[in-house]
Length: 316
Image: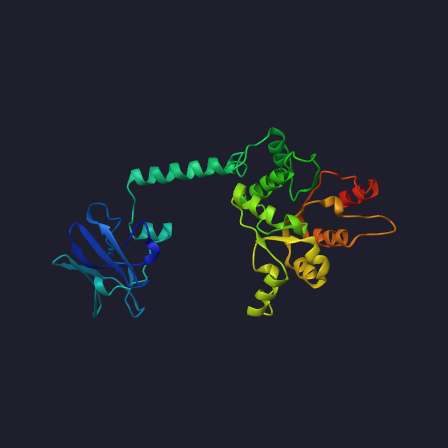
């Protein structure tokens, strides 16, 4: 059995030559080649009183173990089971199974695994987790804003830095941090039609986030393969234009039903609201925002359409 891949089950040695050993794992059909000196292999052995299973799935309790020419045979009352006939699907993947099967690691291997887990734990507890690794030159205020947003449970904020101060960077940091830490898994970004590809490139190049642009053609293609499927359940990170939803209300309804952990809206100053008139874009974001746990609105000119629209956005 391979200690590095116990899920493969029992293996059978098929060839030993030139300092290498080839094993076939019948349960999975996999073939592995190992260097004899460093092969991560352990022989599976059972003792009297333990239960074994043969290829047919029959289980028996061992009464005695015989060895002849290095080959083990498990014996009981009126039956014998050569080790080559043990079930291929026997596995010692879990800790209890490994303990019962006496599959122990060397102390050095245990120490290495423990160090790796400790380092992983420290990495996951780092306050900079999700903020580093991007291809960006961070400005202090961007890191501050992103950190403040991410400390909130299901943040709903309006980012209104002046033009050129990096609102897209801040949004990317928030999205990346939330995804890395597992706070969110489904993200919908709504932008003007002219900014679709700019956002696609920015998220991929700077944060290695592959957003999927959804338009009518993409939705129709998904429905063609499965008419019952909500197209917006086909991907987790989706980029759309508000114009697309305004022109296709049925798609907006599908997006609402899909559910989102985080909704991001760029150029949010176009969301107009007044007592006399509510824009279609505002209604769309309001509807989608009610179904989303978190909401990020981005705009450099929050009062462009007046304070009434500005405070209406803050209500979202």
